[in-house]
Structure formats: C-alpha cells, structure tokens
Image 1 (cartoon, rainbow, N blue to C red):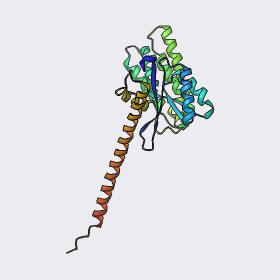
Image 2 (image 1 turned 30 degrees about the horizontal axis):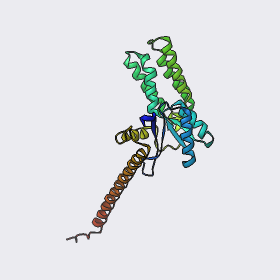
Image 3 (image 1 turned 90 degrees about the vertical axis):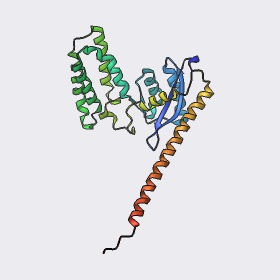
Image 4 (image 1 turned 90 degrees about the horizontal axis):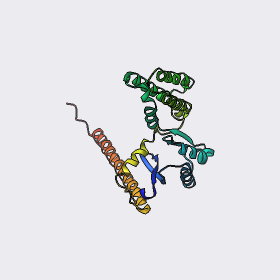
Length: 248
C-alpha cells in the first residue's frame, strides 16, 4: 500500500466467545483526512449498519467523520484509554521535570479518576479533576508556552469525560472493551504477513486468510475444551455409577 500512501485500518468486534473478529477493513490516505474517514464510515454503514459503540484513538478527523456519518444513529464514540495515557505522557510529563515522585502521584490520581466506576460519583468528577490539575499546576518546569499548551490539552480531556471515564462509559455495553487494543493487536499481527508491494487483491486474500485461520483455531480450541469437558463429566459419572464395596 506504500505506493499510493495508503494506511490499512481493520474494523474489529467481539464474537460470542469473547474473541476478536475482523468484520471489515479500509485503506485511507496516510494523512488520514476527514473526508477519507467519512467515505469509509459511509461504506461500513451501507453494508453493515451503524455500530452501537465505537472506540477510537481520538483522531480529530475520525471523530468528525463519526459525527457526520453515525451522528443520527445514536452511535456512542468512546476514547481508547491507552492512547489517552500516551497523550497524557506526551503533554504532561515534561512539566514534572526530574520530580519522579510528583509524576507518579499525578499518574496514580489520573488512573483512579479514569477507573472509578461508581455511577453515583459522577458529580464528584469535576472536583477530582480539579485536584489532578492542581498537582500539575504546582510544578515549576518548562516555559510559559509549553505549560499553556499542556493545560489546554488537560482541560479538553476533562471536558470529554463522558468518552473515557468509567463512571460515564460503563453505562454502555462494551463487552469489557475499554481501548483499541484488540484492533492494534490485529494490525501488529498483519504486519508479519502483508507487504507494501502487495496488490489489492493479494491484500484481500491475506486478510481473509488470516481471519479464516484464526476462526479455525478458535473452532479447534472450542472443540478441545468441549472434549475435555465431556471426558471429565463421563469420568465423574463412571465413578459415581461404580458399585459400592459390600460392608464386611
């Protein structure tokens, strides 16, 4: 795909066994313009319908496309916690300089806020996030411009609370998914079998073959588990049906 500067993106979901399944893939320009995502999402909606929940890495172009294409379908757009933390490190770590203890305290508080799932604590989010912000404001590292940009990013993260904080997101059915990790894992695995010189038909065959192999392995794993279960059950029945030794 490098010849045309295209990026492969896989759409994944979870099957009834909790396994990752590829349901579609798209090729978009490397710059990831919003128009390309709008086209990809329209094609997805046309053939598969609108998703109930969609996780992304927070890309602005993708977020805008989701609103344009799925906005009227009630699709909930949630943010990947892994990518949020990556951005948190990128924007906020420099403010703490060499003070590793203060940085650890900041990170620990962020994860407590992110993972707190009690719906009754929604009204406490603002105070908790203000405390998190205060920890960063207490630092004295970096120039004024760097600090301003960092706090602008942090403020925006707080405004998007309903897309990542568990106390808001857990009302949605996500099947225990809280990030784009499954899709990232698929992309990582595909890198070992596809080449930048592959033509579109070969790319399609490889992705299809990859998914077929995974489905076959899942079937065999399930079959083995069922055989083990049947064997254990039959053994218990055999032992329980064994005649008792007469009492002397």
